[in-house]
Image (cartoon, rainbow, N blue to C red; front, side, top):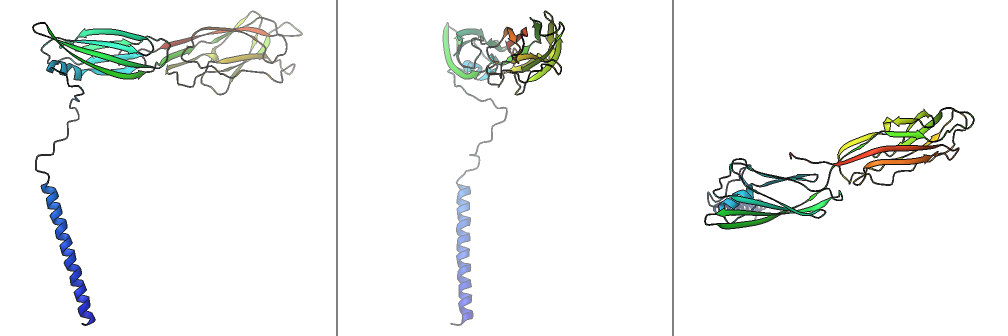
Length: 299
């Protein structure tokens, strides 16, 4: 057999194999399409379709259970259901709030188709820490013939209190005369760490024994803070710094070590001595801290 004949035979063989493979592939695709009958694939649900989380024993209970919405922020809990649910019998909603910090308490209301349902609860502050909440919800349908049908279910979540914090200006009053050789105003150098600061701030002023100086720059305020924020209880100190004479070579201001939240609040007063440990300077310092747990009535 000539070389030309051999080449022609090989080409024909490859073409035959390719035709067989294409036929098999086409047949497989036809079978795959035929395996799914027309109309058996459901439509995608609408984006606003109601998610049925609960399967209650009656239509009325089912309507109310799946309509209840829950919102939380800080220690506030708001449960609502819209007006207009087509309930045919009264449905009572009893909610027991079980807090890992403050214990249990219950509230109950009857669903009103005209106004809907709204139940606001603010968990007591307790120790002002994050806590776990378990809501035991009991729906009771009052049917004719004094018959009652119950449907219990639960919701669980964590609450973390949010705080509004404000610190007043610091009030500084010298108890002694700091000048060594004459009676006059002392040159005070005041230093402090703010709750959020990694570097201390400074202010210089003149002070006289018995006179109060207000340091407005010490004031600080922020809202909606949680205890996990890295905020520290402020620290502060002072020393007398005479111009070019007896100025201290070193002084000390303690770095913050105590967390500001969740327990800070109230009057803070402290008597300080000159941080340079030179002389007999002494001063009373005072300020006030307000720490308020935020409530959200309209979530």
